[in-house]
Length: 422
Image (cartoon, rainbow, N blue to C red; front, side, top):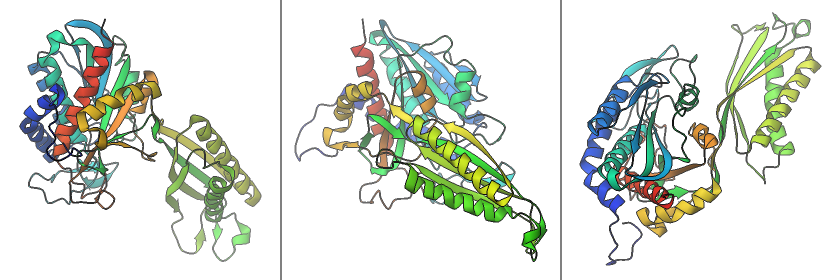
């Protein structure tokens, strides 16, 4: 494996051998899914493939959880702990520009807009990897301690229907764990920011909490030439937005924990010479500490209200949490790092900095101790810092990541189960 000294002979672990043996299947599954991507809440074909595979393995999948979610439990032949392993299934409203022979040409509609559809984040790889992990664990079920729930989750990126909930929260709300109480939850993500062969790891906070905020400023309409006769919500909205940036820079201890507050939309008015009566701003807030998140939201609300009051307008802030921060259980992460090192090579396990992206795997990790890691996806010879990032229409997965991801997940899974056997 990458990182070994020239000529060194390494033991081929059972997890690695299983992953290498499944390479052709992993690639075939991934390419088929890549060519037929489905948006959040619409993963019917993907779910059918997953459920069919699980049935072929002799498992009894539950289907239709959170609309299209699939789950199945494997009972090992010996007593031991219970583990949940999750893969997300949905694609993004992105038109593919990779030029691959199996590139997606799918078109769909996303919240009223015509869009291309692409596995631009790598969830096709996640599904293939977990299908491979399930197959390998079933093959050794007689000697396997404990039980494993395989969870194939819809809508991690958010549902195509804005009235629906994100997938992890919805699966839990619909009783995914009513009859199965796991001792831990594992997940992974292929990552363009790492070289293929590397695995990214961090104990404690890893990925940010994601909030969508919506700010409505109500003013008073007037002619653009006579602003003193109205209340300009556009000016107030601009002042509030600048005020939030000053708040982050001057009121939040960013040496302790990063905070990002970004506006992605600022919509107001219909004509060049009319001051409208309302302005709407929409954006995202990213934090790593729940207490800091609450503090920032309270300050944001006060800034908006105070600027609006000073101008004679009103401000209404609504904050919707899409995912809490993904925080790896420290003891569990430290315990499993050697397993990652055995699977990938010690030199290839990278200590990750905080990442301001978010993941709704955090809902599982808030229910039980969680462990989430990143699998390098960028080919050797390409600088990961310059490679098209996840969510890019040019995101290009090195398929060696499929074998590496399966080997790493199998290794941490078997070591966790065997350590807890009784």
